[in-house]
Image (cartoon, rainbow, N blue to C red; front, side, top):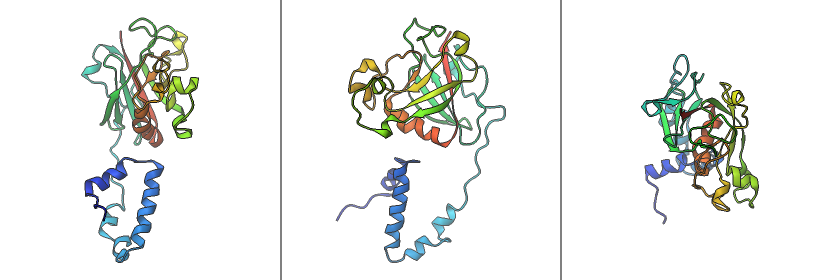
Length: 243
């Protein structure tokens, strides 16, 4: 007889696929399994103790008045967004610190969600973002169209798109004219890395290499960290660079 899962292990199974189709399918299968056992009436009643605990959603934490700007001491001396992000419940904020080479995610209330490695590094001189193909221009963006190549084919053949952008890519819309004022356009958030070769650029944690001015994350962090936030609300991105 197979060993029974502990409560913690049971919870891990659900949290691993939070907001994904596997979770929905799992709920349906669990419901069918409960229906097939004796005592199902005590479990599936509308007034069952466990069901009553989930009958109402807790009140959402209000967004900070005037918008969200979660920068901290790590961003001291850096150039970043001039305005706060107009977040509402369900939205999130990705803070990119190119000096520290990381990205921090915050919910609409300013609560830190996670922190992962990140590059906003271009191909030009250090701390240069005013010319094409150099560092990502500092300022506030929001994620727009996304391109879920991994979901369409998790094992694709080598191509220029798969090499350059990896599993997922997102258009980044400027909100402070930070690209256009320098004659730049097309900044994105993506994975991959042509310099990693193939299949290195498609690896879950590929080496992070500079881009032509975009923001780059590990492929797996785009899937497991950014994508769930994108699917639940507007995602703002604040890019910070050294002066």
